[in-house]
Image 1 (cartoon, rainbow, N blue to C red):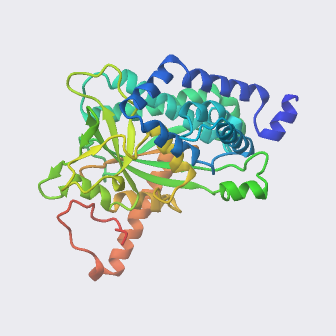
Image 2: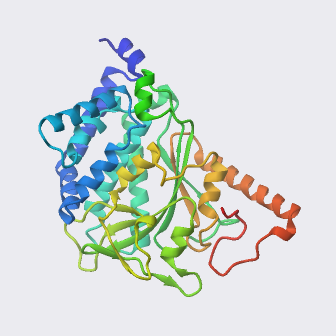
Length: 388
């Protein structure tokens, strides 16, 4: 099959597919890639099953090629009586490292960048003791760098389709301000979906669900360092109360992100793990939470967020995505929002969206002065609409 026919059928040239899949395989199954996964599952034997289940559930992002590859893998496991759990490495190697497996190759690129950045973060950054805010800065920096590397490697595809792959950020403080210390960070996934090539047949859409339009997914993370098997989530503010309680008030998906990092240094840390705050027991009775229970690695969580699950709500507009983050967060905890997406100029777009959101709220407050809630003592950001 020549490149012209291949491009028309799949939206990628034969050389692009070979190059993408080859690099993804080299990165994921390099010594570092295999070591990072081994370090993670060696901490808790259930981690492989939890992560594999999370990846296997991401069917909306798959193309016809990906769905068939996944079905063949499941059938093979059944015939070989391997029914305990799908293997993490097999799902990567047989399905998720192939760009043809994804409806949108840009989402595939984003997933590969996340895989690479979390691997490098765990093995290159986490062994040396550091503060949570410093580690979070290095983590976001690494993700941004990985996005640039993957985008540069496959510039021909991105230029042809008018896509990009980058992280932008906006300052939430009026007139600028100093970044507060702490491990809190907010991330909005802003994905402009493309029509799959070839289009999915109706019977396959039944398996995957309908193609989603533009995707705006606001995510909130609270970073926690840990050693051993559990992380302390009992941090309490003198006026706002338990940090855990504030995290669970948000209407967007709120999570802990755990970095294995200690004062003595750790030679082979696990991957950064994401655990929804809703999966943690009340902090009053359980000040520590098991790190690997109901948790997945960061790249798996991002793929789940793009795929769409009930416990990871999305917004219908960029203004709503911002409001979902800001309505219940502390003024001192989140001063910047990172935006990961495939549209040019997202920093400018979101600054305009923030200005429009503030203008709408100011107008509502002027029209209904008596309905404005008085300032609260719980540390919530005043001036943004709280969801009820």
